[in-house]
Length: 433
Image (cartoon, rainbow, N blue to C red; front, side, top):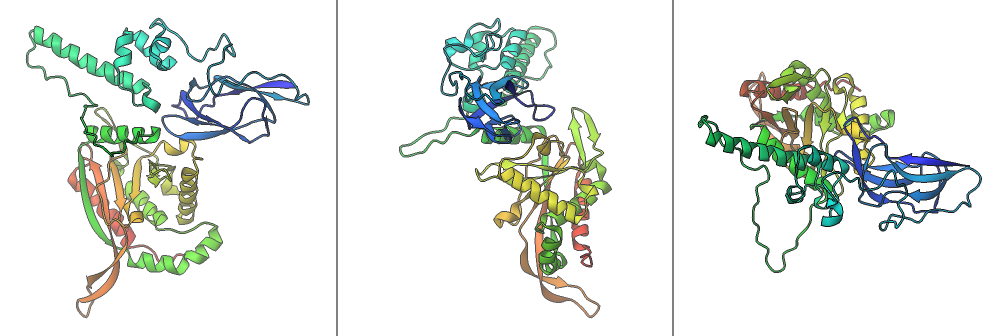
């Protein structure tokens, strides 16, 4: 017999901590290898954590809603033949009277004092470490508006507060000194907007993912000057070709053929033609990305959005793109995405057409510099030029909308790039199998 320490896994290079959102097992439960034990949430993705061993849960060291650093032991699993060992009292429904480990308490205290006990709020070790380093008082820390789960104050909230505090200090010092031409401090990034509540109104709290989406979207509009341009594309050959081959394609490749792999293929080619669009902004530097990693916005059953990324999309053929897109979409909808599968994107596609919308003005997925929206495909009368004269025919048409960051992409580049995508779609090779 042996005691196996289940540790908080490292889900991606930038992930340093995670919140336990649900325990699927309790103390005394017998588990088998690959049984799901708990659900965790990071600032990037939610994940289910399976058991790496067979055995019995004898200790659960952190309750639900705990923010746990990567590598911390979160549970003990008894393995081996002897399964009748005594187990510790569960801690998932409240605080244990006796800490599971004196050397690793759930709440790590710093010189900022007993702020967790005095306020009834939970401040992560990282947040308190930053507060201690920046000499923030307990009153200052508790006054910060939290954007995390259940209003919890995150690292970014503290950094935003420090940034605003620094701007105010600089302005005050400048006013007292000689340099009277300095610009005033920027407005707060989270302005308070009063909203009236009437009888019968329903108040719905944002869930964790909706708060993150809101934060990212506001930040993107604040950082990037958005410009959107549109073009109408004749995709009649693509529609007729897909209708002809989709059944044989699915049988041969064991995956469904939608329009999105065709769009992604055209986008990947165009990004190779215009590398400036396949870039990111870092302050006053433009980073031209070597890899073409295309993100796809996927609507989740909850109504939220997530953007899994097709890595090296320009190196995949149509079958490879179809398989990867379907795999990532399924993983997104079943909460199986890994953190590395939603990072590293260099360009994003969002499909308004799936909701029968003809066009839109998407918001850039930072730190990328452009995003493409694909509209619904509709039959329209169109003028067709021929050697014998013009004629009117029914064609399948759609709109493409490109939003781009005008700091990097000017109108000429944005227009040429979007037109190149349209050219690739209108020149699609229908002779392929």
